[in-house]
Length: 636
Image 1: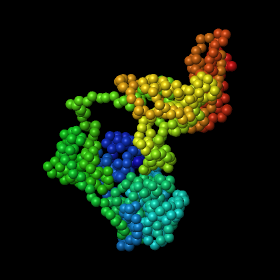
Image 2: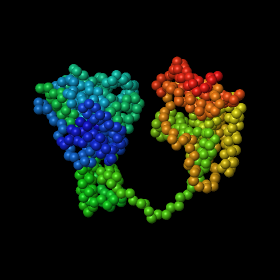
Image 3: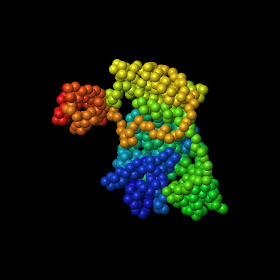
């Protein structure tokens, strides 16, 4: 969530501290900080709002409430005002709500005789600061109130709406064109806002072209609604339209927010789009099942036990007042009336977490958890798995982790994350074979003359879960076959070696270049965890970086080196050369003859930005040759 400092300042009469101080306060008590963007006339704080706080804090109002509670600042309550020249009418839009399982509340109102024009500078600047495009004063007003309160709002051109506003499910195959030009084919699972002629908007996701507000609009209908989080998300995913509106509905908001947002957006439009004849109608509020108020009861003793501090009744009361929670206390028992926007507060522990957060976890002293007796035991399966891992790593194998999800399986997933991940894997070798093929295609990039992989993980069948080990080998050419033996021979030898190492015979199944065997049936007497987790296939100083998506190019270079030039020195000559695209160097051959040594290196070239041409690589090769020749080497 991007938070504009100027926007946040509008909630407070007193001047806010520097942006860095605001960000640190929020980070210490509420949100993770993603960064700060200092602009010409504003600063924007990027905070990570997790799903449990998305109900109220995907908004400047929510963050302002947080900051006010943390700093004891007083919030301004009169930030919106109706324009002086406004006429009120009793006329209201007619709304027909056909599905209250997908639409919890629908609030609508007419505003007539408005003028559509560019937004005033302050409004456009605030939206631009947080990365939004200014469109016109009507649309900008609806977007502003959404980012201000967290409530999505939509405006229809009232003269383009035929008949009633109907909230219904789409007909199978029904079509709409969105405001940004996407043509969407709808299904009966999609909720739409329609009139008597057709679809006006995809509920909670995107408005349609049919009733678009443009420069000719003079009368509008405002929609402030609350839609089902699950079905909104399903529709947004299906049509591949993830909007700021759908994001807020997907995370759920309170239906009680709707009338407040309606008043705010009405006030703002009356201010930025009024004419001498502007009229504002009454409100049509369709609310089939009202949200019940929530009350949570908790005791001071429970608070103290859970937080591990001797906090006083006065301190707890002070925190509730800072958070704006209405409450009643009697005999150290608190009855807290939960604010409607805080959908995350449902049990006493939620409220206690709020108390600890405002109190400051960093203010809670560390305590020694003593007075217990516990004798740790060595887990045989953990010991066995790491024993096998260490043995394989020592022999040059790489530990991989493949997907547990597959397209089909004996065990299916209730809510799959994708259509090709609807089941759980019933074996390891299928995924390992895919990894083997992928890595073997990049063998030149990694060096060596064979690919060696293994995976230890769980498989899922109708009989239950099981721990398995799968090992794969692929030689790179006939020379590797002569050097190591064919893959099946290597795997058979490896199975015997593993069995000798763990002290039992291994019953393995072979699938092409892979073997698999169960771990749960192997019983081993664990000795000690000492050094069992120390083996690594990488150096401690190694750092991670992504591989370029562009193809690599390999070249070989062979040369005679003068007496005393070792392979390490020759390697240093090559890597010290000023080259633009050299990423890896491997020695693959050397021999001595007549007092000289011949070295042959494989060189890998790659760019993170583009596909290399022969000209790019030839330039680097020429530089390397010149460096070697300068140091007395003779190119073969």
